[in-house]
Structures are given as C-alpha cells and as structure tokens.
Amino acid sequence: MILRRVVKHVRNQEWTAIAIDFVIVVLGVFIGIQVSNWNASLADRFSETLYLEYLSEDLQDDISELDYVLSVTEWRMSALAAVITTATGVPMPTTRATPQGREPVRTVPSYEAQTPESVVMAMSLLVTFDSSDLAYDTVVSTGGIRLVRNQKLARGMQEYDAAVRDLNRIESRLTTYRDELARALQRAGVAWTDPLSVYEVAEIARQNPELLAAMKNFWTFNEWHLRTLATIRALAAELQVTAAFEAGQ
Image (cartoon, rainbow, N blue to C red; front, side, top):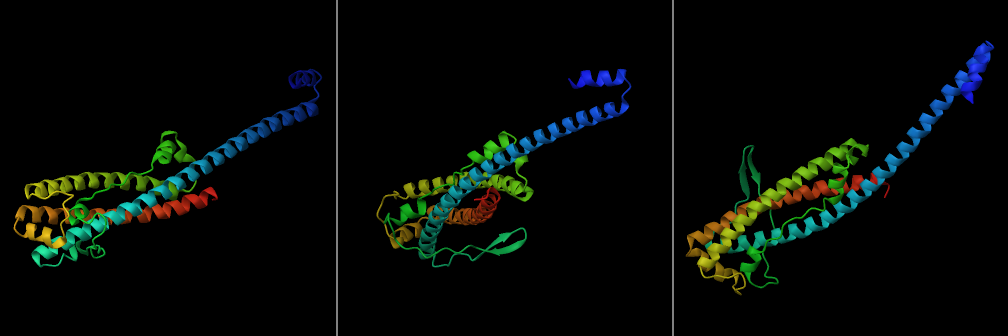
C-alpha cells in the first residue's frame, strides 16, 4: 500500500507527500528494529538472571562441600601430627619453604579421638571435592557467559573453574600419598580398622622409618591441600554473594 502510494505521488510529482512517505517508512523501520532489539535485550536479561541464579545455587552447594572437605582434612592432619610428634618428640614445622621465602603453615586443632576411634582410620580417611559445575559448564557451552554483564564476575568464574581443576590435580596426587601410607601401614601389620591409640601407632612408627616417612609426606601434602581448599572456599563465597546480588536474589 505504501509502495503504491509512493509511486502515485512520484507520477504526480507531489514531493511533499513523497517526503512524508519516506519519513513514515524510515520511522517504521527504525521502530521495528528498536522493538526487536528491546525484545532481544529482555530475553538476554532473563537468560542472564537464570544463569546467575543457577551459578549462585551451585556455588552455595560447593561451599557446603568445601566446608566438609576442610573439616575432614583438618582432622586427618591433626591425627597425623599427633602420631608423628609422639613418635619423634619433635613438633611439626610451623613454616614451609616457597620460592618467595618461608611462609606460615596452616594450623589445625589438636587431635581428639572421635568416631572412628582408631587413629589409623582418622589419619587415612580421605574425601575429595567434587564441584557442582553443571551451571557453569552449561553457561560456557551455550555461549551464555557473554550475557553476564558483570565482567569481574565472569572472570572470577573462569578463575574459580581453573582453581577447581588445579585442586582436582592436587587431590589426585594426595590420593597417591594416601595409598603409599596405606601400603606402609599394611607392611607394618596395621589395618585401617585396627582400634589403635595415638601412642600405639607412634610406637610402631618409631621402629619403622618407612611408615614414619610416609606419614610425614602425607602430612606435608595435606597442608598444601588444606591451603588450596581454604583459598577456593574464599573465592566461592565471594562469587556466590556477587552472583546472588546480580540475580536479584
């Protein structure tokens, strides 16, 4: 209809009418584009909010699991320290060497016999962190990361994902040291379920250099594990607060 009217106006050389028709067409196209962009923006904001809500929930689950893994790691370290110090009469180191110099070792509460009563089980018990990364993987695989307007949050999630992957590698090596300890205990005639006290295990270790070395190595790697867990836990807490805020929760 507009086209026929424009042709008619051209034939009649009605230039004012032609100009008006041109403005109407341009304005109509402009409004159409703006409405389309507005609808696309609304859809993007809805998707962003949904992604952030899922990320916030996953991070909260991660924090709960990290707290559990941290508590088990601290208990394991305290059990190992109790046996090692009793066997050697030497306190555990309070600093560690790094390329930047010596740094403090993370302290853990003193060991207290709990369930299981065997200190062997306590110093051998190992749980690892399994991140709830479904939401993040979905966001990345679908290109949804571009919808997150808070670039600090987007970079933080990428850093968090990389940190969790590093933690997984650390825990893989930690499992190797735990298995070496288990073999050393078995060669010493000790099973995880043996109801032995700190003093009884310390006496066995005092006469078994291989077992004592395995305990010391495992303790050292546990300290690294503990520091990494604490760092990731702090990052997860910061990201969770930001994601929840951005999602309007």
